[in-house]
Length: 639
Image (cartoon, rainbow, N blue to C red):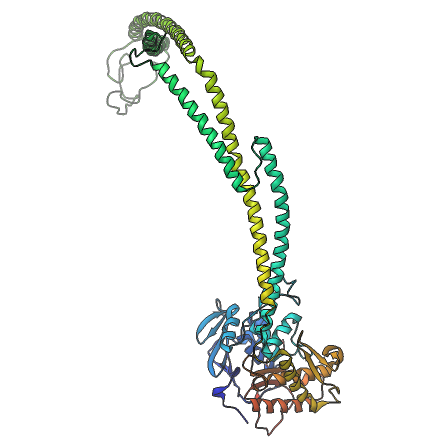
C-alpha cells in the first residue's frame, strides 16, 4: 500500500522546472510511493532532468558542466521543489552573474559550499567529520562527510552502475554506508578518537624529543654562563633568584660606599661650615678665572665686529673703484655713442622719436646745446669726487685694520691667561681629590662587574623557562594521550549493533536477488563485514566475484535495500527515501530483467512510501498503478 506522504521521512522530489530567458518554462511533476519514469528518445533531456535535481542539491560545478552546455544555453535557471520529512522547500539555481555559486532556498540565497550543512540538518542526518584516509592513525586531517557523498549512492548515473559511486575513495564509501545503516556517529567518533590519539602520540613523541634536547642543552648552557661570569652554579629558577639577590645586595653595598665617598668629595670641595672655604684652596683663582673669561668673551665679540666692519669698508672701496673705471670708460666712448638715439624719456618714460626735428648741436630729449667737451668735463668732475671718496675709505680701512690687529692680540693674551688659570684650578682640584680617586675607581669597577653579572640572570632564567615549558608540554602531551586512551577504550553504540544492521541490509539485498539466482545473478548470497563494510558474494569480495552484468544487478539490489532502511532499521539510519536511476536499460543486462527490476522497485516504493525516478528510452511497462510515465516534450541538438 502507499503510505501517507504527510508523515513521510526522508527526501521526495515534487517538481522540476527549467526556466527560459523569456519567462517560459518546462515543468515535470513527480509522485511519491511509486516509480516515475522519464521516457523519451535520445537527447530528450531525460538524464539532464536528473542532473538538474542533482545541481539543485548543492553541486558546486558550473551550470554548463553540471547539466550540459545545450541546456545551460537554452535556459537561465532551474528549480526543484521537494519535501524533506513532509516539509516543502523550493531550491533554485541561476547562472546569472553573481548567483552561479549560490542555491536559493525558499527565496533566500545560500552559498553552495554551505548547502551540505543545511540539508543534513533538515534531514536530521549525522553531520560528522571523518579522517582523510583508511587508517585514522596515519590521517593528516579530518574532513566533513558531506550530503553529496551520500547522494552519489542514491543517484546512480551512467558512470556508477558497476561501483558504489563514480571515482569514490574507499574511506568515503565506508563512511557513507555507515551513515546509511545508522552507525555513522559511533564509527566517526571512534575514528576521530583514533585520529586524535595518533595526533596526541605524535605530539608526545615530539615533546619527548624536545624535552631530551632541552634538558641536555640547559645544563651545558647554564654551566658555561656561570663559569664565564664567575657566578655560583645554579640548577633551577629558585637558585637563580637566590644568586641574583646575593649579587644585588653586594652591588647595593658598593653603591652606598660610592655615595659616601662622593659626599666626602663634596665636603672637601665646599669647605666646612665655619670657614666656608676648603683647606688649602685659593678662592681668588675662581673669581679671576671668571673675570678673564668675561674679558675674553668681550674681546672675541669686538674682534668679530671689527672683522665685519673691515670687510664692509673693503667692499665700499671696491665699489668706488669700479665707478671710477666706469666714468673713465664713459669719457673714452663719448664720441662713439653720440649717434645712438634715446627711445625712452628718463623722466616720464614716454617713447621718444629720434627722427623728429632738432638742431644738430642740441639734445633731442631736452633741446639744450651740448658738445663732446661738456660731456667729458662732467665725467671728469665725477671722477675727482669719487677719488676723494676712495681716499677717505682707504684711510678708514687702515684704521680699522689697526684696531682689528690690536683686538686680536688682546684676544690671544686673554686666551693664554684663561688656560693658565684653568691649569692651576685643575691642579689644585686634583690635589684635593687625590685621596678619593683610587677608591672611587675601584668601586666603579666593582659596580660594573656586578652589573654585568646581573645581565646574565635573565638569560639563565630564559633557559630554565624553556626547559620548564618543554617539561610542561611533555606532561600535557602525556595527559592528553592518557585521556584519549581512556576515551578510546569506551565503546559507543547507538541502537542495534553494526553487525546486526549489516546483516539486515544484506538480507534485504538477498531477498531482491533471490528472483534472479542462476541467471544473471550467481548462486551465492551477499554478506557485509561490519569492521570495514566490505560486501562479500559468497566468500569473495563483490568486485572479485562478479562480472559486469552481475555487478549491475548487485547495485540494483543495493539501491532496492536503501528503500527499506526505515522499515528494516531505526531512526539512526540516514534514510534517503529517494532513488535516481539513470538509464538502467543501457547497462548490458537483458531488457526483461530490467523490466522485472523496475516492477520490484515500483512495488518497493509503493510499500515504503518512497520515490524512485528512472530514465529510459525503451517502451515503459503499462497498466501498473505503481509506475508513472513522464514523456519528455522536446529533443535537443546533439552536443
